[in-house]
Structures are given as C-alpha cells and as structure tokens.
Amino acid sequence: MPVITEIEDLRRLYKRRVPRMFYDYTESGSWSEQTFRDNSDNFDEIRLRQRVAVDMSGRSTASRMIGQDVTMPVALAPVGLTGMQHADGEIKAARAAEAFGVPYTLSTMSINSIEDVAEATTKPFWFQLYTMRDEDFVARLIQRAKDAKCSALVITLDLQILGQRHRDIKNGLSAPPKLTASTIANLATKWGWGREMLGAKRREFGNIVGHVKGVSDATDLGAWTAQQFDPSLDWAKIAKLKEQWDGKVILKGILDADDARKALEVGADAIVVSNHGGRQLDGALSAIRALPMILDAVGDQMEVHVDSGIRSGQDVLKALALGATGTYIGRAYIYGLGAMGQAGVTRALEVIHRELDTTMALCGETSVQRLGRHNLLIPKDFSGDWQD
Image (cartoon, rainbow, N blue to C red; front, side, top):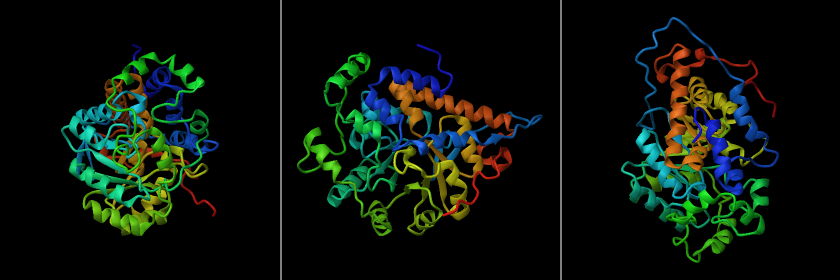
C-alpha cells in the first residue's frame, strides 16, 4: 500500500481500483467542464498570509455546524451512487464520519437506503432530498428520514433538470453497470472492486427501488428517474417542504445573492454555496468566487456553507477565512472510499484535518473561529463586479 500524504494520492489509487464509468461520474463536470475546473483553480488564486513568532500551542479546529459540534467545520457532501464506488459505500462513509466527528449527508440517490445507514450508525446523520414530481414519494421519503432520526434535511435546489454530462452519457452510467462489451472489458481489470461488490448489501438505489409503485429493478428505475426531477420547484414548494420536515433545513445550490435572500426569507437554517461540483450549469461562477457576494447579502443572518472544489485543508481554511461557517467535501472522500473503503474515508479526513491545522498554525491562528480575511491575500478582481 503506498504512503498516503495528500488527497491526490487517494485519487490515483481510486482511479486504478474503480470501474471507469464510476470514476468518470466523480471526476467530471457538465458540457466543457469549465466550471468544474474553475472550482479548484479559483481556490489556488487565493494566497495565504504567513505570520511568525506567534504562540501556536493549544490549537483547535473544533467548531459547530447548524448547532452540532464538529471536530472541524467539514461535512461529507451528499454524493449519488456512493455504494457503486465501494461495496456498502454509504455505510462505510457514514461510519468514518461518525468516528471522526463530522457530519455525513446521505443522498436521495444512494445505493444503501436511509434505513441501512441508520441501522449501521449510532449518531444522527443528515439527509439530502431531491424533489420529485411524485409528491407522495417525497412525503414518504421525508418521513423515513424523520423515522431514522436524521438531524438535518439538505434540500438540493439546482437539479430541477439534469445538466448534460458528456462522460456519463458516453459511458452509459447505471447502477448496477449495464454489461456491454466495453463495460465487461473494463470490469475485468477491476477484479478487487467486483469481488467486494458481490458481497454488497445492495447494488441498486435503495431509497427508491421497492418504495415507488412500479419500480422493482434498474430497468424500471431508469424510466422513472428520467421524468421525475421536478422542474416546477419554486420557493413556495421549498417552504412547504420545510414545514413537512419541521427541523433543521439546509438549502444547497445557491450561487446568487438574490436566491440567498430568498432562502433567508423561507427560514433556512443554512445555505450551501454550490454549483453541484460543476455538474449542472457549465459557465457558472465557481463556488469560492460566488461566496463573497452571498456573504455580503446574508452572511450575518444565517449560516453560509460552501462546497465544490475543496480538495485540501488549505481550501477549507480559505473558505472559512472568507467567511463561510462550514464546508463540504465530496470528491475528496469518494477518492478515499474507492481506494480503501472506510479506512480511505478516514484517511481523507485525517489528511484534510492535518492540512487545516498546520496551515492555521503557520498563518498565526490557534482556532478556526479566529480565521478571517486578514489571513488571506486575495486578487483585487476576485469577487469584483460582473456585468450582466
């Protein structure tokens, strides 16, 4: 086993172990993938202010996200098909997050179901909701998350229709994989993954199969999901969902200051500045570039979290220093999961925590609570005005 010192080490190992269609699902964006690239590249434009002769002892990365104590302000983002990256992937990721002391968010489009994850963990996790045309199914899904004692509902707002993802279309992405000549040839080189998947609890979407009338297998599911994402989602429906949940609500997919203000009006406890990892509207702003204007609009009135492009503890620090109260990692932990299972997720969290702690110390800070723009050197045009 190679020595893992950075997230990139996990990505390289992940690429070798996981079938191409699932690697491409993670490591790609929509259309030309410009926004996918910008998400990471724009973090690199921000520089850090090194400080010296500062007492660095007694450091702490501990914080809170929506009232929950966390070892560091980093949550595991909802990622669909996680159980295709590694057998029982959602269960293993949730267990790693629980042991580390950070939130885990289960996707609606997970392989392991809400009940599977609840049975395998001892602390509440968060549940991410995609709104569907089938309102009865959505209501039952919310109730299932309540019954599982999920402590927050994360409503994704930016998937009313599916962005065109060229690699997924060309690969014929499905769960389980469709056995074409190309797929079989690739799977033959991933024997370790295949051996683990033979013993998986599930290999289809556990929150959907068996819970929707007329959907009993992957063939039925494909037809159902193709017409189920709700293009009519609006703020009135969001308010109704919040009322149904009657608990902590996080709205994910905010890139515009006006939308942030509307999220505040409907009573969201937090928003996630996010462009879906560059997988929806290509050409949109990177999340880190959008963050300052959204903080200017609502930052002192609600928690503002950010995802999309975070690959290191330094990225986490930059987001927090800009003013975010929480961050999410998706690809970074998926690399670890695909590479090494639960141990890989733990290793990804360890790497990010170490990088955050070390960078914080070298910036002359002993607590994430004290991070601010004084720790950064930001290009003058980084969050400047954009003509519309």
